[in-house]
Length: 162
Image (cartoon, rainbow, N blue to C red):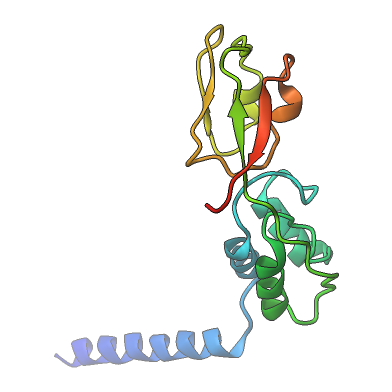
């Protein structure tokens, strides 16, 4: 019985030490990267100059790149990042992006399959040699598919609201 009480007391003491340590020492850079990443729009569009939102979040935390490199996030994401990282070089908020989606002129699509692997959210479906189409509810409007089309059958269309 004494050993059980001693074990419970030891576990409680370790818990108190860990709770104190979590409050006393700041979180790791990795935690901050995850917090920054959570604020980004997750379009994976590469408009920031990085291949996706997580690499941009890492660059913000590690390299001190400015917070204004995310056009899809617009002013809302910029201000959330400034609140999280008030001492970070912020730049000015990017203009609000126009909501857009990719549309494929299916009559002109040759099924080359070049657009499918570049879509970061798998919004384009089709098989090689067959017509492709865009799942409009999944499309984030990044536009990465447009320059890959050899027959220019993909266009970005502005939509009123998403």
